[in-house]
Amino acid sequence: MIYPLAFPSQAPATERLVLNRRQSATASSWTYKQQVVQTAAQWALQWTWPPVTHLTAEALDAWLLSLKGQIGTFRYAPRQRYTSPIIGTTLAQPGYAYNDSIAVSGWAASAGTNLRAGQYFQIGDQLLRLTQANAFADANGFVTISFVPELRIAYSAGTAVNFVNPTGLFRLASSDGSGYTLTTDRLPDLGTLNANEAV
Image 1 (spheres, rainbow, N blue to C red):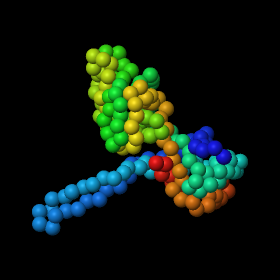
Image 2: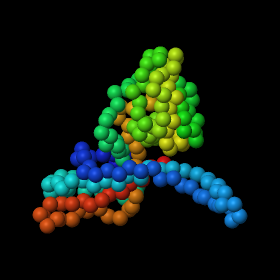
Image 3: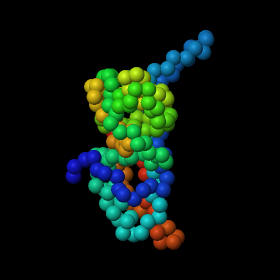
Image 4: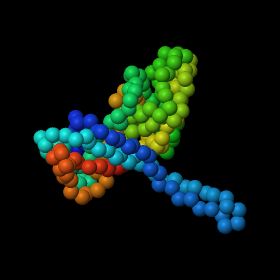
């Protein structure tokens, strides 16, 4: 088996994709002044599949089994309602580990960016979510964007920035066995599935 696997063609019925942060906070006993330290952040994915035929349920269950618990990885594309037509974008400058802001090139000078807060994008294997972007590119066709989580590794200038079909790399959150339950209508129900970003 070669990982990562592609996600099955059966679209989820529900999806919840949240960013969990590993943080610790301490407060002064006298002033209540708080100090917060963050060490990492990771996407957590939860999804369900709609009621499916027995044949489809068997195929989905086989896919889950092929992940071998938490050993295998898979690629997941967030089900964004609006996809982005922005193509040909690259890092204008190097993006360094732990940075949460980068300059992206690929627009005409002073052109509208068509970027929106909340949209997902991808650099390398990392799934990112835009929190702020300039409405227009500068005179060089560069746009500065802010995002979460921070970059985990450094990327060189010219690295592709994928706004069109971003994916994240995930693995199941548990090694417990998979399977499906037959509903009162005798339809297979695979239940709620959980995965974490593979970092």
